[in-house]
Image (cartoon, rainbow, N blue to C red; front, side, top):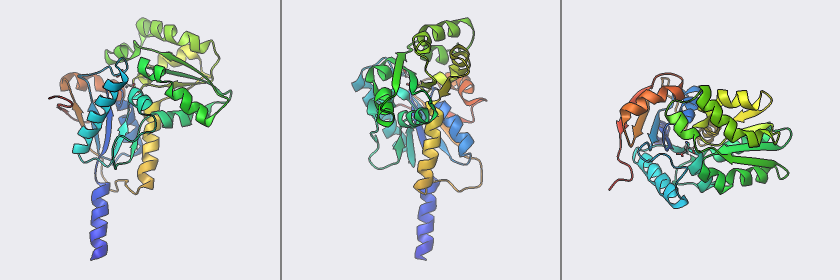
Length: 280
Ligand code: DGL
């Protein structure tokens, strides 16, 4: 009887959803990877679309927003939280924003993947202004590869381009050339797309950098990292059916729904609801 009670309790823990948040649509790159890796997990996503961009805001404001986003997901009884935002991840370092749940940002998983991929130890990092100013990617890389040469550049126009659908063509190519020329000149062999929005520009970036440069997507790496964390905590959902995705946004669900397809590789696979986070 005791065993059965324990089994039921464990099953209840495993059945809880995985929580993912970002300032907007970028974290959907993590959702896409999670859906592929762990198709039977339920996912609850929060996109803070009313307050995007985070990357041009102060450290205090970004940390306040990240704490509110985390607390919102905690009210949904999730079993793990992924901060699928390069900006938040850079500012919190390895800190867990929850008191008791498994938690990861995207920075460490991306850095580990980049260090494993590089042959020449010359690594480029692009991100929002706050991410690049924090220097966190460089510090984390040097913790693993002391001799690495890290070349960073902020790409403030990439998030608005992606959020508004300018992901190919002349305008995207112009800004990719503008931001990536200083990095290309340094002959990096690996480039961390240090913001979860940037993989949507991957084709244009890959064309510009050339096929010898390995591109690292932090959202995907965080999804792999989270899968291993759930496995090692015995929290993987064992149900034998497709997981349910639920989305919450702090502004227009309609516009989120329209734009999500670019990130998910297909139309949105779940209900989108409005949530008031950090209001009042
Ligand atoms: N996806 C966020 C990041 O990874 C977008 C940045 C922003 O809100 O400025 O940094």
